[in-house]
Image (cartoon, rainbow, N blue to C red; front, side):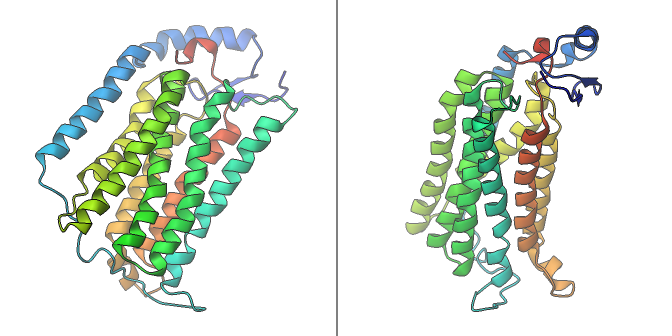
Length: 303
């Protein structure tokens, strides 16, 4: 039994995890009448996730091919230092490694600790998060490799690890909001589809007609899934962290598109470097959520 009082993300009031008491009973009754009807059932959640995926797929098929911009590799800040070309775009990948290694260490400690924790109700739920944090570590190396010498061949190794993060994140949402079994089965499928989108893009580039529609669709769906998850019944507190992760993703895209204007203000830091920081912050927010969350009352756990 835990002695510390936690805050439930749904009701906002304190309760003692793993303890059935007056607060648990009172809050579950109150939430049944106030928040329950606003959350989708497991069946409707599946329909929503599939419907949005189908909608994005139809939209992308109706669009013309999206070739990679010829100027994509020409980043604003190309300053070298200490023998490292494009220094700041290279070293700004270090936070990915720090967050990824910290996340993997936390999950490992959580699994081996003799002190009961409620980070994962089912131990198998850790696998998508292992994918997220391992993907961040690989992204640190892949992105640094790309920015050391920017070209399409190196860009493949930047994008492949990020698809591991995208696919694992969507799988984590499915595990915790729809069902553990279905989420774990979809985890390798999501990752393979993401990796396939990068390889398809690069294959097309080699043949002179690059098309990024599938890769873009996966990014868009992964981002929207963070918001869709808020409509489904949660298993844990801290659900709003996914909204913060979505916010960091949007911020990263803004930084990416304003690379040159940001660098033009004083030539101190570029938008692309800030993009790396924003993405790493999103990863940190996921780790922070895992460190702080506790199970919500049983009646509100997705089944």
